Image (cartoon, rainbow, N blue to C red; front, side, top):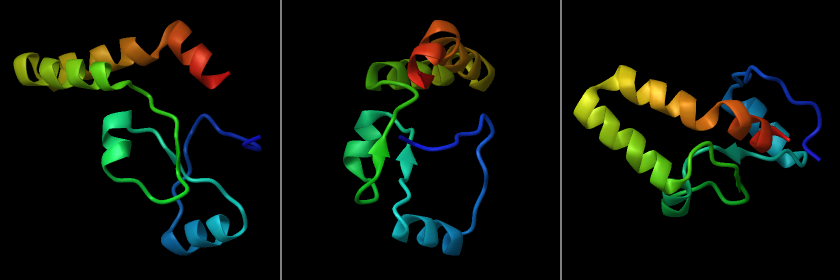
Length: 88
């Protein structure tokens, strides 16, 4: 349903994004539901990488252990079987 997808996201400018959206493209927001619910572009699809509890855990880890520990935790939370499940 989403057409061809790439493992590496492509950066596009605002004009290209507007053209894609006008032609039926879909904007995917990967933020946690709590962030998406707070503010999102109308018509955007939310496919979160982290759920709200996982986001909170990464934030707490960042505050107490620093960015490297928080990044490592984030990778563990979205890697492996979780990644396979979400991509399929």
